[in-house]
Amino acid sequence: MEKEFYRYNPWWENTNTLLDNLLDRTESFEFILPNITNKQVVFLTGLRRVGKTSLMKLCIKYLINEKKINPLHVLYVSMDDFLFIGKSIIEIVENFKTIHKIKNEEHIYLFLDEITFVEDYELQLKNLYDKGNSKIFASSSSASLLQKQKGYLTGRSVTFEVLPLSFEMYLQFKNIVINKADGHLKETYFKDYLLTGGIPEYVLTNDVAYISELMDNIIYKDIAAVNGIRQIRQLKDYFLLLMERSGKTMSINKVAKVLGISTETSKRYFDMFCDTFIVSPVTRFGKLNEQLVSPKKIYCCDTGIRTYYTGERDWGALFENYVYLRLKHLNLSYVYENTTELDFISLNKILIECKFHNETLNEKQQLLFDNFKATEKYIIRTYNDVEFIRAKHRF
Image 1 (cartoon, one colour):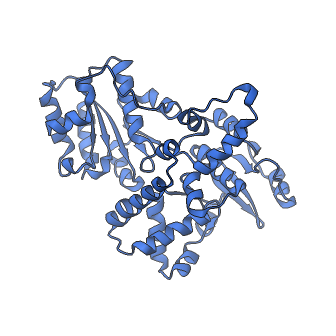
Image 2 (cartoon, helix red, strand yellow):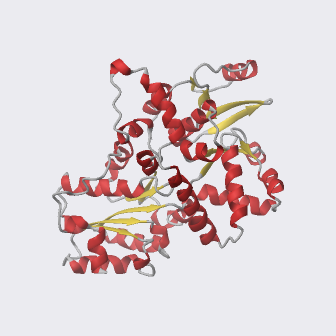
């Protein structure tokens, strides 16, 4: 195990070039920063390869370079590595402390990637937390498996969903600098961003095969293998229908009929794709019975993935999907009254309608928008409009 530890933790031997190849994720990192040295267990969730591991390593870099933490007291391990399958977290930590002769009262920093591959991980994390000398960071690409920890770590943890790169981060990854004199180019690059999305590796390589490989891995490994599904073709067809419905309402029953599967199977598949963060459901605003009987709208995890599978270049739909991802933290629902729909209403009653550039509200939409009771109202047309709301209503 010692050899694997050193492979995962190069800073134990050399801090001179500590993680120099890491690209900045300032926007995501700034939300983690207030919790980087307190006692809370920090959970990072989100789609596979969206950047959870990179954020963990940025935290490690910050701890060692800025907080001057002893590098030998920082452990990173990927729990889905076959070399650690069957190993308990407690066993791994004890081995780590033995290697570096770390006393039990000394403080350590643990970064446990894909924690949900460990059976009873929540009990083991609670055990470490209760001892009081471990700062724990953990990640998972499964929302439902991570829910297990809530009963054991209630009030002891904080969870951040890592989303694809923002437009500003996209420009940084591409080494694109837009001077004030070239401000007119920002819109062109923004459209490029909507088509490409924000999956870091895809942004860097522009290799379309990467998206296909990523989604196949999630479907085969994180959904089919984990849930014992053999009808892979059926599962992939379901995924393609989800991509086509992105930004629209989704009927579990209708999809079941199209694919010739039971409603129960359709619901099960839908939950699996939500669980792996491929799509996010948005419920109708209203009373509980209205929410339960009304179809959910769905949004893709990334505009580039949506574009890859649908081939659509509907700027309005792509922009709406982008707005959802940027404002997801506001707990959004959609508004539907008298056959008229408005895009989003937040938990704190911010009404939002997305109209890319010169698109306009129709007469019924305008009437509903004007009369709907809300604390704030916005018609969003540009990137700047979205960022204004995001800056005003932080996490």
